[in-house]
Length: 430
Image (tube, rainbow, N blue to C red; front, side, top):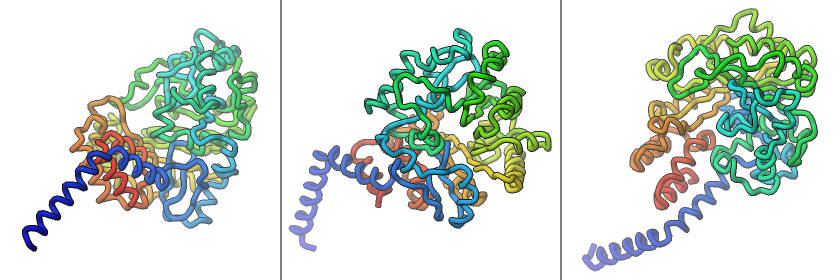
């Protein structure tokens, strides 16, 4: 090639690079919009049961399975009556129903609205106002502001969750759409209880503080007796958290008390599965309508898992999981089993293996980006390290599975420079 031709090409390349530098924000914005079209977990998209199946019910999960459509419907039919499009008809795309349907009771007595906000955003305390005065808490100034933001589509409190986690589009948080009272001040009964009654846990996870929380703050006077008439009969759903709910006596008392007055209530559980499913426990579970049981597993490498979730042993947890799967197959009304997994510096390379694992056992999968402690979060990586993570995922994960890991991909990409954002959004969207 002649020298003049080479110089001409170099000049053209330099001009293109200069243009990209000058307009990198515009380029990034255009590509981000294209990404949103293909990867956004749209509230108007119906559940898809083919191959890599659709958006799952509670925990921002996708069901990754080889089941055919009929097999998937057998499992999902008892959980889903209406499509997401039908449920959310008339709601704007950023609207969340949780502040209109739910309360969460924390181990220290704090009353909140959303499990994803945890006790960092309380609206009251059961020790100050007993359950029979719960409306004074649920209609506190802070709670009313929360609902007002969604009604007016001026979202501040949940801006990060709506923009990145997309938890307002989780099917399980929308199942009560037809029953919700969409007003700033709530008059009707509470529809959903997230019960985090005790900190008691059999593990000592270093990134979790719940096991250090108190126990026994919910007594006959402030909770159990008034709840029998003012709460339990009207609940449509109960979401059990912990600590570890299956080692807490209050869990089994709650099942008994609610079942006596409200046998049609639907139940959700989050567990570490560091316990064995005994005949006694299975008989208790047989009596209730379970929608989803979510198991928290952060690593499939024994040494790493046991470092993150002491004193549990991974082989025992996986053995318990197999027993749970077998038990579920025998139930008259099977429930969905899901896997929660924190993606952090110690575990990010395992994401492809988790996708294969959940596909093998036909489980829902919910990857969660660890934010705190910051030293363990991918968000504290350098830009070069973040690019290495993204390059690894581009190489090791099939592109038709990228939707399954958007809670990990999007925050990482968004934290990069505009040029890098443009590149990775384009790579994922191609």
